[in-house]
Image (cartoon, rainbow, N blue to C red; front, top):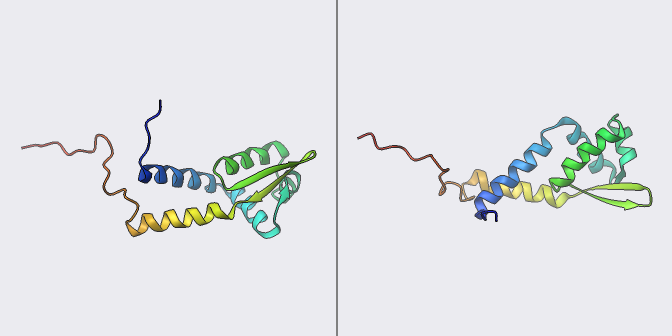
Length: 118
């Protein structure tokens, strides 16, 4: 059984996942295309960012697992849609982090205690 995370630690992990997914220029270009043009097929995205279908699919998987895009099947095509709600969640979590209301200050990582020297 996995230990349950408190809300602040869960939010920190969510931010890390989002930042990692957004930390690649190809994935940022995919997000830009979806924002500009709306839902696109994997083939259209492949052409739009000049990548092979297997490579664009790998990037799309990362974006999907991070919750930044949704995919649906229509016959033989996979349609990708931007999840704008994920970006709203990101902005809200960032605002809590930089305003000091995330609850992280109350936590101390294991092993961070200062030893008594004296």
